[in-house]
Structures are given as structure tokens and as C-alpha cells.
Image (cartoon, rainbow, N blue to C red; front, side):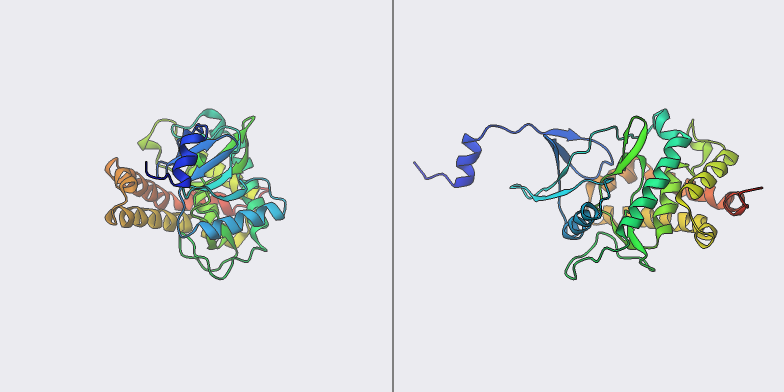
Length: 278
């Protein structure tokens, strides 16, 4: 009989570890094993793990801790208990309380990254944006937010983290959570005047400065353009997950939302810039 390798022997003799598949953004295959999550790695993983270790060190609790790489080459992260909403969004994820909580959590996250210095030999999923004020999460959306007792308590999936201006994250988070979406494309999306009110609530809860407020809607448009181009670049490179998103019309949806933001940009900017006592 041929000698078994150590890995084959261990596989035959070790008890089977139960894996629970986790669903969400639809790009990565993610599983839960006990109190941990296992996810695919990439060239960006060392940078993300360094960031997560920094967040632990400074006491920020709204992100999973990193525990290295498993025998199958997957990253090991904390499993954060709670609810992670997806579309169509449940009512608790559409409330003003959720909106305010996400804005405050995002501000806390950004402040926690301000002193982070990435190792010189690491790279990020997305190219850094200028000015590099903070480490942007890169995909602040309901499906990357953990809720407990109807309150947002943590962000997950830091693959797309990269240095950039805070407004780069804030604008996309506002797009997702207000949401700044065309009310005609889906039942339940709030009317324009309600979006404007919620956008102001979000900016106030984040404590967004005037300069960033004046740039928010243009940045949201830039973020959607960046997302659409990234989807097509990935699909053209053979990424089946992004190709599937395009096949189902996600890029068309984002274009419609960008047109909606541009069409009502004056309304949104007026809500952002009106003095609080008016």
C-alpha cells in the first residue's frame, strides 16, 4: 500500500468539520465553522489583516478580528452574531434609527483607521484614492452590516478596503442606506423629498463637514461609475460572479440610480447645505 501523506491521513482520521455556507454579496464563497468565518484570499489579504489587527489594537469592536489562514488557504475571521440584511431590505434596516447608527459607526470606523500605517509590502484590492485621509471600507452596504436588536453594530467583508478620502465611503454608504435610488424602479424606495431628508440625517449623524457635503452627490456619481466599470472589467477578465451580476441587469440598475441622483442633485445638495436651524 502506498504511504499516505500527512494531510491525507489527517483528513481520514479527523472528525469532519461542519461548514455552513453564508450568503450575501454573491461574489465570494463564504462559510461558517463554529465561531469563525472562512473566506477566499487575494493579494489584498495581508493589507486587510494588518488593518483588522490595528482595529483590535485601538479598541474598535465593529469589525471581525483576523486569525490567519487555514489549511485550505482561506482567511479565518471572527463570526459576528446578528442579522445581516439583504435585498429586499427588512423594515429594521430601512428605519431612521438604522440610518443614524450606520453613519455613527462609519465615523467611528474612520476615526479608528486614522493612525493606521500599512506595511510597505502590501497591496489593496482597489487602488488608493487621494487624499488618503482614512482607510475606506469600500463597500458599506446593508449586506455588509451586522445588526443586533435592530441596531447596526459592525461591518464585515473588508476585501475592498483601501486608503482614500472619507467622502468616498460616506457617499456610497448614503447611496445604499438612504437610499439614493430611483423610486420608479422598485416598490418601497422613498420619494425624493424623503431621500433628501434622510440624506441630511445621515450627514449630520456622521458629522460631515461642509466641504465634504458640497462634494457628496458628485462623489456618489463617481462611486457608481467606478462600480459599473469595475463590474465590466471583472466580467471581461472571466469573473463569473460579476458576469452574472451584469446578466441580471445590476449595471443597468446602477446607471438608472446615477441618472436619478444627477436629476435631483440640486434637491439633495440643498438638503445637505441648509443650516440646521432652518
